[in-house]
Amino acid sequence: MKSRRRETPILKKILWIMLTVVLVTANSPAQADFLDTNWSVVGWTGEAWYVNTQATIGKSQTFNKGEAHGVFFECDFKGQSSTYTTYHTVDDFLKNPEFELFKPAEKDLRLSGPKVFVHRITCEGDGSPNFRRVLYPFITTEKRHSAYYLFEGGYFTLYTP
Image 1 (cartoon, rainbow, N blue to C red):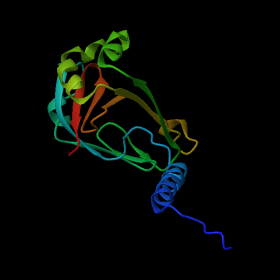
Image 2: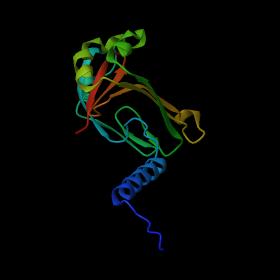
Image 3: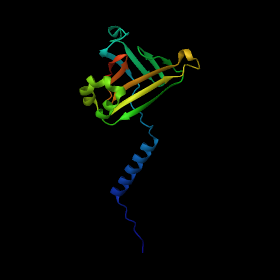
Image 4: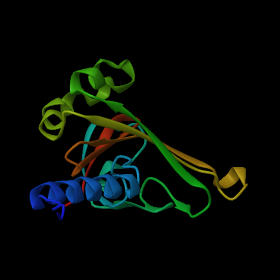
């Protein structure tokens, strides 16, 4: 007597879907928070000490795979690296005394949150101390269209579509 093996097509489909999800997830790059794009400077809030804010508004800052060009920071593939700290709520971010100047942006941060990312971007400068740079803090949010850069006695607001 022949033994008949019964296959269930639904079970096979589920197993293939699960295997595909596991393989795709395992081979996906780690997601660092969004930074690489062209950011347009759209506003200023605070007290400008030395910077001419009107000359800065309308300019842009671009980050792209280890290269940066713009009104705030330059790094031409000479050792750019970045890291960030995640604040899981706007309240946690604003509790940090280092970021109290962002209090006027609270409403906008809440609309873009709840997570806030504080980036530190460095450029090694190809070994030359004259070309080493640090951009900190560069703030992005979970919805990824708004950014803020703390400078002197206030902050610039940036936007990317």
